[in-house]
Image (cartoon, rainbow, N blue to C red; front, side, top):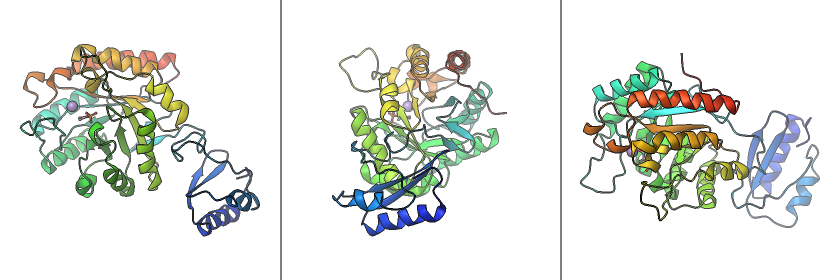
Length: 337
Ligand code: PEP
Ligand code: MN
């Protein structure tokens, strides 16, 4: 729309898009309003829309991902989760155990990471384990503990939702849904979280190309949910020294094509705490908007992913290093007061 377009003009465009059998998506930027029209493009559409008062230009979006593309939304999107911002000047640090194991451990680890700069608490209650014999998570009990500890510490919480049938249940507790790497192309689940109206932290599938990954984000966006944060967490390569290979290049590549915030998960990429800090710093240096990292104070007792869990002290040292790299890049690493 033209910079000074009136509300009535915007409203009229939305209506006309609907009449053409397309779905309108309104995006109000700081300087201008952009209206997406998604659907089957017919030859007459462009002319009809261009003729409407207040319309400045009609631009076909060539990428298969539309709402996720920079062509649709030029500025970086800032996603806010209960006061924590992803994609602006701040670097967001999410930390916590792989799985919620019990109330005491979560309280201990939660306060340890919060003291050291985490602004959001993570913890799985529904765990996608490779083996059916491994710990599957505490389910709703785990979510209750996470909510309680998050509230006590004054930080929002994020936890994975494994199945479409659980979206309503998980949504009652979390501030942000996590979609796991194994579910990046579970399209029914993506539609459900898209409809749930809560922010989504979407991991990249370990065998998903960047384009496939952006199409997954498009699923959530297409349901009217704009609050999507992407997360590079390592992909399958021929290398076996690490659990997955953190695709650092995904950060600038995604940012080139897409306006959504991107964070990195160095823990699942490394699979070994020895490499976690280096990968976290590499991600930040490459332009990531934050990290999500696993921390445990008694890794030997961890029921899941103990080998990659940072000790709280190491986590604290890493936050200090992130702060320094962030400062070079003009970013703040804020901690909650
Ligand atoms: C997790 O964050 O606990 C997790 C299972 O991650 P991913 O889906 O990336 O493997
Ligand atoms: Mn884990």
